[in-house]
Every structure is written in C-alpha cells, then in structure tokens.
Amino acid sequence: MERLIILRYSEIHLKGANRGFFERALYDNTVRAINSTKATVDKGGARYIVKDYNVVDEKKLISKLTKVFGFNWLSVALCVDNSVDSILDAVKEFKIPNGTFRVTTRRADKDFPIHSNELSARIGEIVLKNNPNTKVKLENFDKELTVDIRENGKTYLYLNSIKCVGGMPTGSAGKAICLLSGGIDSPVAAYKIAKRGAKIYGIHFHSYPYTSERAKQKVIDLAKVLAQYCGDFKLYFVSFTKVQEEIHKKCNSKFMITIMRRIMMRITEKLAYKLKCKAIVTGESLGQVASQTMEGIISSNSVVSLPVYRPLIGDDKNDIIDVAKEIGTFDISILPYEDCCTVFLPRNPIIKPRLESVLIEESKINVDELVKECLQNIEIIQIKA
Image (cartoon, rainbow, N blue to C red; front, side):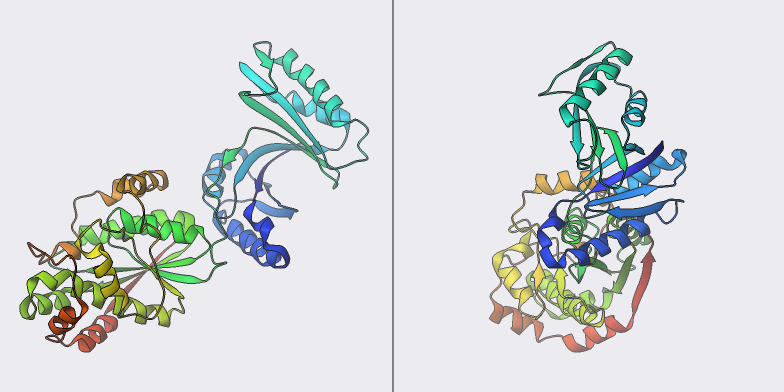
C-alpha cells in the first residue's frame, strides 16, 4: 500500500492534437514546484502522480501543488494492486467519524472481477462497520470515498478532493510583462494573466528618495507571493524620479499622471521587446481613478504597438479585493508605503485628456532622452518560487 497525491486537469482535454505540448509544460511546472522536496512525478492519462515523498512533507507538497496553474483537483490517495482483497483492506484505513458518505467506484479495468455497484456496496459495509456514527447518503453527502480501478493494475482510493487554482500551465501562452505598482490591483492582474498560461515579468517604477526603500520591499514581497503561482519571477526596477521632476517642472500639472503613464508604457514596451514578451499587462479598471477613463486609456495605448491586457477592466473593486485576499497579496498591498504615482500628485488631474492637448504638453520635455536614461539604469531582482 502506497500513499501518494493525484492531480487532475480538465481544460487541457480541449487542446486536441496540441495537448501533448500543454501536458509537457504542466509536467515541467509540477517538477519545478516541488523541487525543494524529495518526491517524484509520474504522468498517466489526465492524471499526474506525486509519490516517493516523506509523509511529513505532505502538507507542504499540497500547498505548493494547489498553486500550480493547470490543475483543477488534488487528492491524497492510497494505491494498491487491482485485487478485491487489497482494496477492501485499504478501505479500513479511511476514517469518517460522523456525517454522511457515499462510495463511488470507477472501473476502467473491465477485467476486474466485480462490478462497480457490487464493490461499492461491499466497501460501504466496511466503512459503516468501522465508523458507526456515519450513514450512507447517495446525494447531498458530506464525504465521498472514490475507488478508481485503472488499467495499469493499480487502484487509487481517496476521500474527497482539494480544489486547485485551475487555468493553463505557466509558459504555455508566451511571455508578458506586468506593471506592478504595489497596490491591490496590479498583482491580481498579473495573477489572472499568468493563470491563462503566460510567463510573467514584473516592472516597477520608483521615485527614490520621494518613495522609501520600504515601498520597494513591498513590491518584492508581492512578487514573492506571485512566484508561488507563476514560478521564478524576474522583477525590473526603474528609477522614475527624473521623469517626474521634469514633468512637474515643465508641464501643466493636471497632465502629470497622463504623461507619466505614457512614458511608463514606452519604457515597458521597449523592455518587453528585449524580453520577447508579446503583451503588456496592467491592473487598470475602467473609471477607478482619473487615469483609467476611456480617454486616459486611449492616450496611454497610443504610444505602444504591443497589445495591452487589462484583465480587471470591468471588475468591481470588491471583486478585485476578494481575489487579492484569496491569493495572499492583499495584506501586503495595503501596507502604507507610497509608490511613485503619489509623488507630485496634482490636485485636479485631467480626467478626459484630449490627445492633441497631451501631445502639446508632452512636447515640453525630451521624452526620448528620458526613456533612454531610464532603460540604462534598471535594477533586476530575481524572485525564486
């Protein structure tokens, strides 16, 4: 009898002839996710099996595996040979102290000598005998004991399953770079795009000494959380102080945020091309702040040719907060360390900037030179998963 972890995917089933590519990516990501723990990964059908691990590491493994994009469900199972006696002996290991249960037998091995319903009934009798305070209930039950009899001569038995994050394997959809501000929204945006298979890089603009080292550390801590889902995470820090000082000194203050945003997008796109990224990701939500109106978004889009993904564009703030809490970034995001967007913040920023007016104000500074200088002074931090 062997104890192991079964992982199952669903969406990859839809990939037809390309399914092997996604399965290989998922396998590689699984191996990377558990590389600090002694265990092996096998693949069979739509199942991935993690085995040969120390039971004391099981909770740690589960915590890591539930965060691997591509898996929908995880079960801790006992594995025995395809024999009636072995299966009935293994059933005795499962404890259901109270409540209701049902037994579900899946018999992929059609040569197995007992039909599914008959085996389920025999297993149910053993469970009832060993757990007198529980009852059988075929619908609306509390727990489900699954017996999965496979063609490979092995039977897996498990009690209930744990939900994983789902999505598609990291890296299967190409690369993207996300603007990480340190607020609530941008880490959630990065998470959502990574969940669809993108390999994510992060870029953060800071305004030291106007912003503190603690603000920088806050972004690093957010990247560490994202790395639990996205794998190793490369973070690019761009000094934006001179850019903001130039805009503040030479341009109409109400255009401050609009011009800042346009220069950030230019810098991000140039870095994206260098990293072979196919898209830019932002945490913008329509109408949430002054720069996130349709006119503001059109203005910032106009300076880049890469597609800009805004996965939160139609989300309510409370919905975004719920995801941030779920993935573990919320408590870090609300730490009171300000980012560069709060520096030289105008009292009345323009809400619906006309592009012609933006161009007039922007012409008062040497944009190309500022972008070039920013790109020459990037700090790179590698975040390990």
